[in-house]
Length: 481
Ligand SMILES: Cc1cc2nc3c(=O)[nH]c(=O)nc-3n(C[C@H](O)[C@H](O)[C@H](O)COP(=O)(O)OP(=O)(O)OC[C@H]3O[C@@H](n4cnc5c(N)ncnc54)[C@H](O)[C@@H]3O)c2cc1C
Image 1: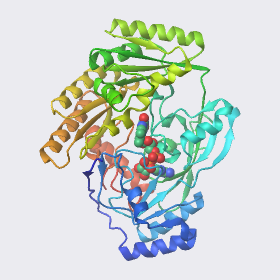
Image 2 (image 1 turned 180 degrees about the vertical axis):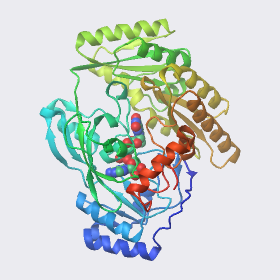
Image 3 (image 1 turned 30 degrees about the vertical axis):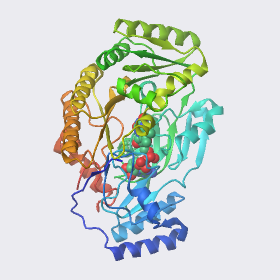
Image 4 (image 1 turned 90 degrees about the horizontal axis):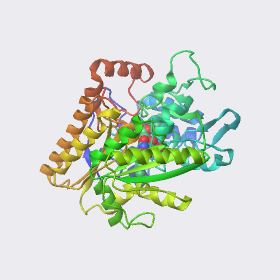
C-alpha cells in the first residue's frame, strides 16, 4: 500500500556483508540453526509493511527468533562485535515505518517470548515476556476480573506496544501504555541486561529509566520482559452514537462533553466519509448507518452511573446540534453500535480503488483546539478532490487523517504530502504533537525536530549514545545520528 520511500543519514559504518555473515554463523552456533531465518518472504514480512505510510527499499539480512533474555543478550553481544544493526520486532503492526530496516542488519523477532512469567492478581500486576499478545493476555486473565486496557492493532505484542507507547480507544478513561509499565527488563546493544525498577506501584528512587525506554521505538534497547499494572474490568458497559451536521459540530460536542465532566470510557469520531465507507463496504453490526459525522461514546460503571452518564452526554450532544442520538438497550445492540468504529480501518481498505495507496497519519492537540484543527485539516484535504477521511480518539484530542492517492502521479503525491505537512505544522502551532500514538518511525523525523528543537533532540541523542555508542539499535528511526 503506502510506498513513501525514506532514507537515513548515518555516520557510523556498519558490518560488511562478510562480517554480517560471520555474525549470523555465530548466532546460529549460539541459538541453533532454526533461530535464524533468511527466507525471502520472512525478510519481506519483517522489512516492509502494508499498513505503514513510510517504507524503505532495504530489507533485513536475517530474522532471528530468540526465546529468552539470555539469547537476546547473546545476539546483542555478537551484533556489537561485528557492528550489525539490530531492529526489534513485535507483530509488525506499527504504521510509521518503525520496524523498517534502512541499514539492513538483523531483525530480532520477539514472538517466541510469549510467556506469562508471574501473575499477581492480588497486586493488580503481571510479569510478561515481550512477545505476549495483548488480546491473548486479556482472554487468559479475564477470570480474575482484571485486564490490560490498551487496545492498539489486535496483533500487537507487549514489547512493541511499550516501544511505541501505544494507546487506542480506551486511553480516554485509562491512559496510555506508559501508565501501565511498572518495570522493564531491557537488553542493551552491548548485551548487558538492565532491570529498570522493582515491583511497587510507585517509587521515587532514582532516574525513571522505565519511562525512557517506553516509547523509544527500539532505538535504546530490546525489551524482553515487563511488569504491567492491570485495571479492573468494569461491572457494566454501554454504548451510544450521536450524529452531527458537520465534523466541527461533532468535535465541538466532544470537547463540551469532556469539559462538562461527562463520565465517558471512550469518545471516538468518524466523519461522514468514514460512515459512507462502512455502508459501502457491506455495513457493520447489521445496520444501515447515517452518513453523517458521528460520535461513538462508551460508558462504564454501575447501571445507574451509566444511565446518568448517557443522559448527560445526550444533553450536551443536543445542545451542540446533534441530529440523532441512539443508546444501546442490550448487549447485542451495544456490539452493533460499536461495530462501525471497530471495522473502520478494514472498511477503508476494502473500498480502496485499485492502484491507490493510503497516506494515514495522526496528530494530537489540546482539547480546546480540536474542533478547529479537525475542521481545517478536513477542509484542506477536501480541496485535493481525493478520498480523504477523518477518524479519531477525540476524547484525547487525537485524530487520524487518511488520504488515498495514486503514487504514479507525482503531482498528486506532492499535493497530498503538502496537506499532511500542513497538518503537522498546524498541530504544532496549536501546541500539539506530530504523533499522538504511532511514534516517529522513519517518516516523521523532521517533524519531531520541528516539534522539540535541536537542543532537546541533542539531549535525546546523548542518552542514545550512552547506551548505544555504535548506533546499532534500530538506526534511522526517531532521529538520525
Ligand atoms: C488495524 C490497526 C489498528 C491500530 N490501532 C492503533 C491504536 O488505536 N492505537 C495505537 O497506539 N496504535 C494502533 N495501531 C498501531 C500499532 O498496533 C501499535 O503501534 C503497536 O503498539 C505496535 O505493536 P507491534 O507489536 O506490532 O510492534 P512492531 O510494529 O513490531 O514494532 C513497533 C516498534 O517497536 C519496536 N519494538 C518492537 N518490539 C520491541 C521490543 N521487544 N523491544 C524494543 N523495541 C521493540 C520496533 O523496533 C518498532 O520500532 C494500529 C495498527 C493497526 C494495524
